[in-house]
Length: 132
Image (cartoon, rainbow, N blue to C red; front, top):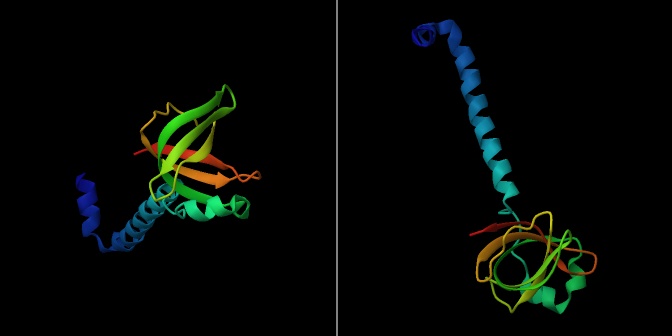
């Protein structure tokens, strides 16, 4: 450890330190932004009312849906489950398909943040979910 402090005193190592510290700082910031983006926080909030009016206008779009699970409507092993959810930001119940690959133990009356997209049939399909 003493070699570190001795090398800090040397003026020849200062340019190296000025290069290492900014690199580490930038690396930490980039890692934070990547992890933040994976959680779905950069998605738009799901437009409940306009989706109800015309679901087919939203093909392929991705949104953040914060909701409470009201009921499990259907389940098929190796396929997934269909659940009824109540959006946190207005509107009545919606049906959301949760593929078996991302499914976890879902509980009625629990709140979830879901990254969802509108599939080719205009149905809401979850890509990622987490309890909050």
